[in-house]
Image (cartoon, rainbow, N blue to C red):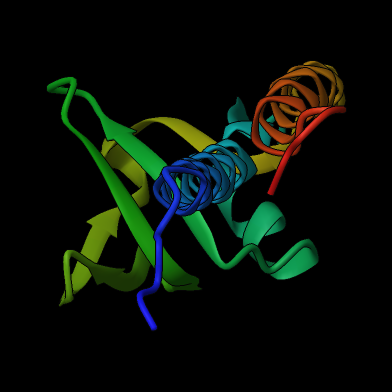
Amino acid sequence: MRVIRSKAGSVCARRAARRRRYLHILVLVLATHATACWEWRPATVPPAHLLSREAPGRIRVTVHEGTSVVVYDPTVSGDSIRGSAMGQPATIAITEVERLETRELSARKTIVVAVLTGIVGYALVTACFGLVSPC
């Protein structure tokens, strides 16, 4: 007995591959947009007060020369900010700090990203699992 293969099988395989590709794109979009909801905001209080009161996990310090560095697990020790930057111990004199910023959640960006992600997600899911599919 001879088995006759139809072209429908290859069509279904291509559609399944396209669905996987669309779902991978959706996951990538969701993962990259998760970080878009945060922004650096200038601190309005002195470094010693900020670090003792809020204890942020990281801060961005700009010194008088204009150089910026992100300091992780910052603490104030005497007249310096101590922590780690780029995997190395870091110490910055408070007198050298021109600007201090903390990373905070932005409600506006979060709403925009959520709406855009929903639209892109809906478009991808609709393209992937169309209303009429023979497979």
